[in-house]
Length: 138
Length: 389
Ligand SMILES: [Zn+2]
Image 1 (cartoon, rainbow over the protein chains, first blue to last red):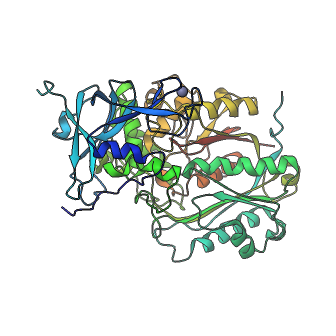
Image 2 (cartoon, chains in turn purple, orange):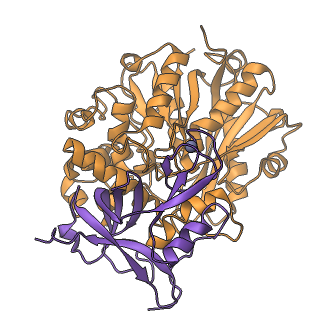
Image 3 (cartoon, chains in turn red, purple):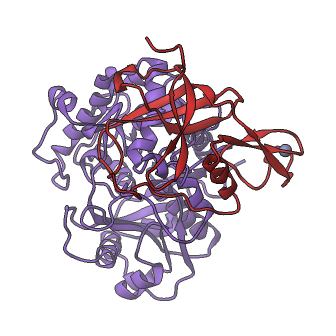
């Protein structure tokens, strides 16, 4: 596998901190410190109370599948196909788009419980992916 | 209250280049050709163009096109964002300019080497950190690099919720391919599609197969907007703009509105529907034909619900009844649409809307008075209703 196949996210003021947390093994969720609303994807102002102050919480990494798709074509270098892309409804209430691993494409289902794990590329880049939750295997 | 835009402007000319997979000319050449063709269609000297509007994705800037076609003084130049979501939005710019007297003859255009040049869905990259680039970066690292992958997430949820089947999507593809058989401009002219062909086509992004996807096309399409009064003096029967709106809703993202409550409907299209019906004073019962944006088949079924032709989850039932076919409740994309005519980012669907009002579609249904046209799905969008003078 080529060491740098994965398109890397740009690290701007509004998102770099999130990827830094991912590099540390955490799935972070931005939290408004004005009204405690969680938001993802991160943005600089709270749409509820307009505060620009925020911190973050670490997600439990547990959730269920709101939706998914299995990608077959086109095939980009470095990814394994069929590639299962998922929309996870996290326990904390926000959603997160990610990849499902350790699961056969025909096993993926709506509302399936999943849990996060950190995937590390050969070049050291780390990102949260998901697998079927412990105990949910058939 | 009557909208200040209602019936004030009309489509007076439509212009196309040939459609192909390899134009062999620049995108600017295609843009100049289609803009000139729209003027010729109307019988208007291109020197009289005083406004040009396109898409942010279009590589031909307004002044480049203006010089190429010999336009005079420009009083309006503008580009609209969000891919195919721009389509009807370009018309809104033109209509606002015409209705307010800012400009008199505005041409909206989209010209692209969509197959031989920069193809859609080849990934997004760049060096400058913008909010747009950060948006895409939540998906790119996971291998979600194509419009099909982004739309499939919503299509799958919608189909699961309402029991929409592969055959239902196939019915949309087959209906539009059937129209393409009467349209010599269409890429798929002479190539009808059966359900067997559809179901056997390659799975791309579940639940979407190859024939659920629009084409990739080299070509251009332009629409000339002028006042309804002026349009009466030009060559063609005016397609009067009853209403034209843009719409984006709370929690809107570009292609990936995954974080709002609604995952199995199109809130921005519902807003477009409400606004365009308000502006036109019309409702779904007044619409006899449509050009619903069709980058993907699933989007057509969802829009039947957004625009109130049926209730939530009932789009599939309309499709099963043959509603989209020429003798159905709502003949849709009678030129073949983006799926079967060409993918000119929705501009060619607006052109067909004008033809339907003129009565010149290659598949002209009987008794068309009002035609509904929509912009891209899953993005900030818009809607347009055309009718006779
Ligand atoms: Zn807040």
